[in-house]
Length: 397
Image 1 (cartoon, helix red, strand yellow):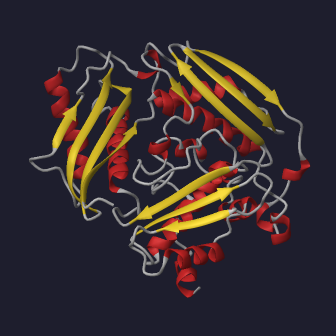
Image 2: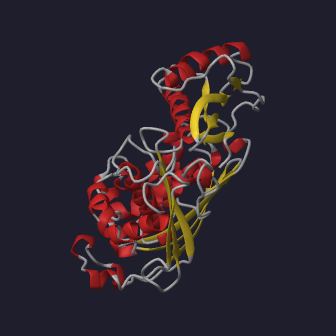
Image 3: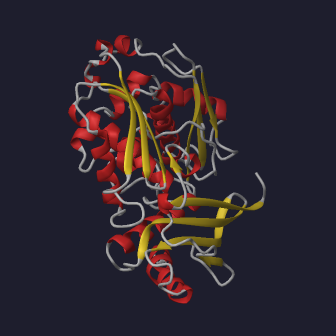
């Protein structure tokens, strides 16, 4: 790692077209699993101009109105009476219902080890989980700050603190590192779309964003912007509303935002739109769970866990751990600890996280809430892979 560098990460609000697609896809996952935890579904969404397109393959006892779910998500995001809105947009679907498979009719909590071995991976994929000591959430600081700014930008719109804002917005944070540690805020960029292209003026907008978004987010942060921080508020003049009326969106196009902001590797596979039996989704959650527990246990200041799966095999064909020189023991020995303490089999992950049942017991869905502001480092609702309940086992092993 370089002695000195700047790392930049971005986040977007729920009205960004890509995130709108992620939320529709995951809202469909929630809707199926609220009614039938034995469902199988993969859902893709695309938006452009006044059109929403949903493609899905599913097998379920649940009856789901796909256009209705999409319109509810669009309305909740805030696209009402705008150029793109939930009432007038066309919702097109391409749906294929698959036959029921009794193999998936089981209760996770009752699975034995022998039964778990009957659920092999059906995808070949390499996944990464990461954790570090840069933030209380054990996440890289740039992506956590970008998410906090995006959340605040969304809140001041929804709470009518800045009622002239439209749903689409983005944030970007550059953090200056020395010897691998964040030392100062190098740059901040916030782009906020407006309901009225001509109001407020750039000067009013910049003052409002600075006072109600930037200052509020950083008032409790240990590292704050300084006199040398480069601040950009709407550096590019958005054409009025932004959103799908101005640029298209697609499920799964924000992988770095969904994971670690580019500070650590990600597997490249989309997380949203896939049911909990897809190892390319839940394996990423298991990898984060392992990495976070390693750091929380004090075994490393940074930890990246890599899992590689092959089609037809139950266990990962490769488990690797990289601590970037911060581990208290050799990385190869730490990898052996991780393999002994964590069950990375698909059935084991389902049993540990209870993923098929969470949509029915979570208020306002579960997977849809993950689809915006990142899948990791969440503390605004219960996310099982953010638990650090394996630290004692790792230290005792």
